[in-house]
Image (cartoon, rainbow, N blue to C red):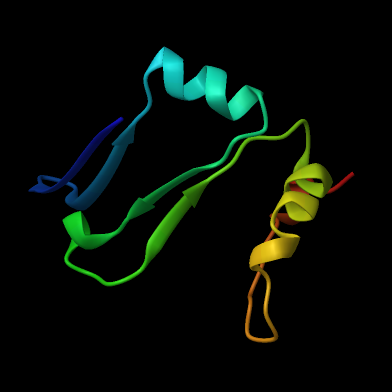
Length: 78
């Protein structure tokens, strides 16, 4: 995985580049967990993949607490 933070003509940009191996692991249901320190902030970035938003929301259940905010764009809800 490639991680980068930059400031360009479009403003600040955070980039996560996934290798084919990363994609294979995601397709096996193995989330990618990485530090956000490269962005200059504390915390963890979790990358998941699923067939739809409902499946991904279920994958997040172990991480959800009472202060968790999940947003799914209305256009994507079926």
